[in-house]
Image (cartoon, rainbow, N blue to C red; front, top):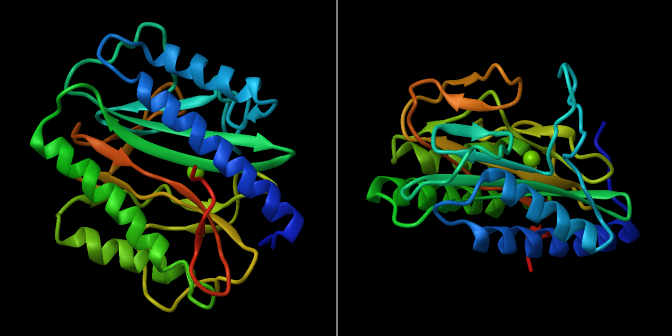
Amino acid sequence: MIIIKTPKEIEILREGGKRLATVLYKVKDMVKPGISTWELDKYAEKLIKDMGDEPAFLNYRPEGADFAYPASLCVSVNNEVVHGIPNKGKILQEGDIVSLDLGLKHENLFTDMAITVPVGEISKSSTKLIEVTEKALIVGIDMACGGNRVGDIGNAIENFVRRHKYGIVEVLSGHGVGRAIHEDPYIPNFGKANTGVKLTLGMVIAIEPMLNNGTKNVVLDKDGYTFRTADGKKSAHFEHTILITEGEPEILTKI
Ligand code: MG
Protein backbone atom coordinates (compact mmCIF):
# COMPACT_ATOMS: atom_id res chain seq x y z
CA MET A 1 0.00 0.00 0.00
CA ILE A 2 1.33 3.42 -0.92
CA ILE A 3 1.14 5.93 1.92
CA ILE A 4 0.52 9.55 1.00
CA LYS A 5 2.07 11.84 3.60
CA THR A 6 0.13 14.67 5.21
CA PRO A 7 1.43 18.25 5.15
CA LYS A 8 2.36 17.87 8.84
CA GLU A 9 4.30 14.67 8.12
CA ILE A 10 6.05 16.35 5.20
CA GLU A 11 7.23 19.13 7.52
CA ILE A 12 8.72 16.54 9.89
CA LEU A 13 10.32 14.59 7.03
CA ARG A 14 11.86 17.81 5.73
CA GLU A 15 13.48 18.45 9.10
CA GLY A 16 14.51 14.79 9.45
CA GLY A 17 16.06 14.81 5.99
CA LYS A 18 18.04 17.92 6.80
CA ARG A 19 19.33 16.35 10.00
CA LEU A 20 20.21 13.14 8.18
CA ALA A 21 22.19 14.98 5.48
CA THR A 22 23.99 16.99 8.16
CA VAL A 23 25.06 13.81 9.95
CA LEU A 24 26.07 11.95 6.81
CA TYR A 25 28.28 14.79 5.56
CA LYS A 26 29.96 14.93 8.98
CA VAL A 27 30.64 11.21 8.78
CA LYS A 28 31.98 11.72 5.26
CA ASP A 29 34.51 14.20 6.65
CA MET A 30 35.84 11.46 8.98
CA VAL A 31 36.65 9.11 6.10
CA LYS A 32 40.40 8.73 5.75
CA PRO A 33 42.96 5.93 5.50
CA GLY A 34 43.41 4.19 8.87
CA ILE A 35 39.90 4.69 10.28
CA SER A 36 37.77 1.63 10.97
CA THR A 37 34.26 1.21 9.64
CA TRP A 38 33.20 0.68 13.27
CA GLU A 39 34.42 4.17 14.22
CA LEU A 40 32.35 5.69 11.40
CA ASP A 41 29.29 3.84 12.66
CA LYS A 42 29.76 4.92 16.26
CA TYR A 43 30.23 8.54 15.17
CA ALA A 44 27.04 8.48 13.08
CA GLU A 45 25.11 6.93 15.96
CA LYS A 46 26.36 9.52 18.43
CA LEU A 47 25.50 12.46 16.16
CA ILE A 48 21.97 11.15 15.63
CA LYS A 49 21.34 10.45 19.31
CA ASP A 50 22.79 13.82 20.34
CA MET A 51 20.08 15.49 18.26
CA GLY A 52 17.43 13.45 20.06
CA ASP A 53 16.72 11.24 17.04
CA GLU A 54 17.13 7.52 16.41
CA PRO A 55 19.22 5.59 13.90
CA ALA A 56 16.72 3.78 11.68
CA PHE A 57 18.82 0.76 10.74
CA LEU A 58 20.02 -0.21 14.23
CA ASN A 59 18.14 -3.37 15.27
CA TYR A 60 16.04 -3.24 12.11
CA ARG A 61 15.13 -6.74 11.01
CA PRO A 62 14.16 -7.00 7.35
CA GLU A 63 11.71 -9.73 6.36
CA GLY A 64 13.53 -13.04 6.08
CA ALA A 65 16.64 -11.93 8.00
CA ASP A 66 17.95 -14.28 10.69
CA PHE A 67 18.99 -11.44 12.96
CA ALA A 68 18.48 -7.68 13.26
CA TYR A 69 20.99 -5.32 11.66
CA PRO A 70 23.57 -4.62 14.39
CA ALA A 71 24.67 -1.08 13.47
CA SER A 72 23.41 2.41 12.62
CA LEU A 73 25.41 2.91 9.45
CA CYS A 74 25.89 0.60 6.46
CA VAL A 75 29.52 0.85 5.35
CA SER A 76 30.23 -0.92 2.07
CA VAL A 77 33.82 -0.90 0.83
CA ASN A 78 35.00 -1.48 -2.78
CA ASN A 79 33.32 -4.65 -4.06
CA GLU A 80 30.66 -4.48 -1.35
CA VAL A 81 27.51 -3.04 -2.89
CA VAL A 82 25.31 -2.30 0.13
CA HIS A 83 24.58 -3.29 3.75
CA GLY A 84 28.21 -3.77 4.81
CA ILE A 85 28.33 -4.32 8.59
CA PRO A 86 30.79 -2.04 10.43
CA ASN A 87 33.65 -3.87 12.10
CA LYS A 88 36.48 -2.80 14.41
CA GLY A 89 38.96 -4.82 12.35
CA LYS A 90 37.95 -3.32 9.03
CA ILE A 91 40.32 -0.43 8.38
CA LEU A 92 39.90 1.85 5.35
CA GLN A 93 42.90 1.98 3.01
CA GLU A 94 44.13 4.62 0.61
CA GLY A 95 42.45 4.00 -2.76
CA ASP A 96 39.27 2.40 -1.36
CA ILE A 97 35.83 3.70 -2.16
CA VAL A 98 33.22 3.49 0.56
CA SER A 99 29.44 3.71 0.47
CA LEU A 100 27.88 5.24 3.60
CA ASP A 101 24.16 4.50 3.89
CA LEU A 102 22.21 5.90 6.82
CA GLY A 103 18.59 6.07 7.94
CA LEU A 104 17.21 8.45 10.55
CA LYS A 105 13.99 8.44 12.56
CA HIS A 106 12.86 11.92 13.55
CA GLU A 107 9.55 12.31 15.38
CA ASN A 108 8.63 8.79 14.29
CA LEU A 109 9.21 9.42 10.58
CA PHE A 110 12.04 7.98 8.49
CA THR A 111 14.42 9.34 5.87
CA ASP A 112 17.16 7.45 4.04
CA MET A 113 20.34 8.62 2.28
CA ALA A 114 23.61 7.24 0.91
CA ILE A 115 26.81 8.61 -0.59
CA THR A 116 29.97 6.98 -1.91
CA VAL A 117 33.24 8.67 -1.03
CA PRO A 118 36.93 8.18 -1.83
CA VAL A 119 39.48 7.16 0.80
CA GLY A 120 42.51 9.34 0.10
CA GLU A 121 43.67 9.25 -3.52
CA ILE A 122 41.67 6.90 -5.74
CA SER A 123 42.07 5.63 -9.29
CA LYS A 124 40.55 7.37 -12.30
CA SER A 125 38.19 4.46 -12.87
CA SER A 126 36.94 4.66 -9.26
CA THR A 127 36.46 8.43 -9.58
CA LYS A 128 34.43 7.92 -12.73
CA LEU A 129 32.30 5.19 -11.15
CA ILE A 130 31.43 7.51 -8.25
CA GLU A 131 30.67 10.46 -10.55
CA VAL A 132 28.46 8.45 -12.89
CA THR A 133 26.54 6.87 -9.99
CA GLU A 134 25.85 10.26 -8.42
CA LYS A 135 24.76 11.59 -11.81
CA ALA A 136 22.50 8.54 -12.27
CA LEU A 137 20.75 9.49 -9.03
CA ILE A 138 20.20 13.04 -10.28
CA VAL A 139 18.90 11.74 -13.63
CA GLY A 140 16.43 9.56 -11.72
CA ILE A 141 15.35 12.37 -9.40
CA ASP A 142 14.72 14.63 -12.40
CA MET A 143 12.03 12.18 -13.57
CA ALA A 144 10.33 11.99 -10.15
CA CYS A 145 7.76 14.63 -11.05
CA GLY A 146 4.09 14.43 -10.13
CA GLY A 147 2.18 12.70 -12.95
CA ASN A 148 5.15 10.61 -14.11
CA ARG A 149 5.38 6.91 -13.30
CA VAL A 150 7.89 4.80 -11.36
CA GLY A 151 9.09 3.24 -14.62
CA ASP A 152 10.12 6.68 -15.90
CA ILE A 153 12.70 6.92 -13.10
CA GLY A 154 14.26 3.52 -13.77
CA ASN A 155 14.14 4.05 -17.51
CA ALA A 156 16.01 7.36 -17.29
CA ILE A 157 18.67 5.83 -15.02
CA GLU A 158 19.05 2.80 -17.30
CA ASN A 159 19.38 4.92 -20.45
CA PHE A 160 21.94 7.18 -18.82
CA VAL A 161 24.03 4.33 -17.41
CA ARG A 162 23.98 2.28 -20.62
CA ARG A 163 26.60 4.47 -22.33
CA HIS A 164 29.00 3.92 -19.45
CA LYS A 165 28.72 0.12 -19.58
CA TYR A 166 28.35 -0.28 -15.84
CA GLY A 167 26.24 -3.05 -14.35
CA ILE A 168 23.02 -1.77 -12.76
CA VAL A 169 22.14 -3.86 -9.72
CA GLU A 170 18.63 -5.18 -10.33
CA VAL A 171 17.92 -7.30 -7.26
CA LEU A 172 18.01 -4.26 -4.97
CA SER A 173 16.01 -1.09 -5.50
CA GLY A 174 14.73 2.17 -4.12
CA HIS A 175 11.50 2.26 -2.14
CA GLY A 176 8.82 4.30 -0.51
CA VAL A 177 9.85 5.69 2.87
CA GLY A 178 8.38 7.74 5.70
CA ARG A 179 6.23 5.95 8.24
CA ALA A 180 8.53 2.95 7.82
CA ILE A 181 12.06 2.70 6.47
CA HIS A 182 10.82 0.54 3.60
CA GLU A 183 7.37 1.15 2.13
CA ASP A 184 5.71 0.52 -1.22
CA PRO A 185 6.38 1.02 -4.04
CA TYR A 186 9.67 -0.47 -5.17
CA ILE A 187 11.69 1.98 -7.26
CA PRO A 188 13.90 -0.11 -9.58
CA ASN A 189 16.92 1.47 -11.27
CA PHE A 190 15.83 0.14 -14.66
CA GLY A 191 12.53 -0.18 -16.46
CA LYS A 192 10.14 0.97 -19.14
CA ALA A 193 8.96 4.54 -19.48
CA ASN A 194 5.30 5.24 -18.73
CA THR A 195 4.81 2.04 -16.72
CA GLY A 196 4.25 1.32 -13.05
CA VAL A 197 2.75 3.31 -10.21
CA LYS A 198 1.84 6.94 -10.90
CA LEU A 199 3.76 9.47 -8.79
CA THR A 200 1.42 11.75 -6.90
CA LEU A 201 1.62 14.67 -4.51
CA GLY A 202 2.64 13.57 -1.00
CA MET A 203 4.43 10.36 -1.98
CA VAL A 204 7.89 10.09 -0.44
CA ILE A 205 10.40 7.76 -2.09
CA ALA A 206 14.06 6.84 -1.80
CA ILE A 207 15.85 6.61 -5.14
CA GLU A 208 19.15 4.72 -4.90
CA PRO A 209 21.10 3.56 -7.95
CA MET A 210 23.83 0.98 -7.29
CA LEU A 211 26.31 0.71 -10.16
CA ASN A 212 29.01 -1.92 -10.57
CA ASN A 213 32.21 -1.51 -12.57
CA GLY A 214 31.48 -4.91 -14.16
CA THR A 215 28.65 -7.40 -13.90
CA LYS A 216 25.27 -6.38 -12.50
CA ASN A 217 25.19 -9.64 -10.52
CA VAL A 218 25.64 -9.58 -6.78
CA VAL A 219 26.10 -12.23 -4.11
CA LEU A 220 25.02 -12.18 -0.47
CA ASP A 221 27.74 -12.75 2.10
CA LYS A 222 27.56 -15.40 4.80
CA ASP A 223 26.92 -12.56 7.29
CA GLY A 224 23.39 -12.36 5.85
CA TYR A 225 23.58 -8.65 5.02
CA THR A 226 26.55 -7.64 2.87
CA PHE A 227 25.92 -7.74 -0.87
CA ARG A 228 29.06 -7.93 -3.06
CA THR A 229 29.64 -7.79 -6.77
CA ALA A 230 29.79 -11.30 -8.20
CA ASP A 231 33.00 -10.52 -10.13
CA GLY A 232 34.78 -8.69 -7.28
CA LYS A 233 34.79 -5.33 -9.10
CA LYS A 234 33.96 -2.09 -7.33
CA SER A 235 30.47 -0.73 -6.77
CA ALA A 236 29.08 2.71 -5.92
CA HIS A 237 25.76 3.82 -4.41
CA PHE A 238 23.98 7.14 -3.93
CA GLU A 239 20.55 7.75 -2.43
CA HIS A 240 18.22 10.62 -1.62
CA THR A 241 14.78 10.74 -0.04
CA ILE A 242 12.48 12.66 -2.38
CA LEU A 243 9.07 14.28 -1.95
CA ILE A 244 6.78 14.07 -4.96
CA THR A 245 5.05 17.38 -5.60
CA GLU A 246 2.75 18.48 -8.40
CA GLY A 247 5.82 19.79 -10.22
CA GLU A 248 9.54 19.43 -9.58
CA PRO A 249 10.62 16.82 -7.04
CA GLU A 250 11.94 18.06 -3.71
CA ILE A 251 15.08 16.47 -2.24
CA LEU A 252 14.41 16.07 1.49
CA THR A 253 17.86 14.75 2.43
CA LYS A 254 19.72 17.99 1.93
CA ILE A 255 21.25 20.59 4.19
MG1 MG B 1 17.26 2.92 1.01
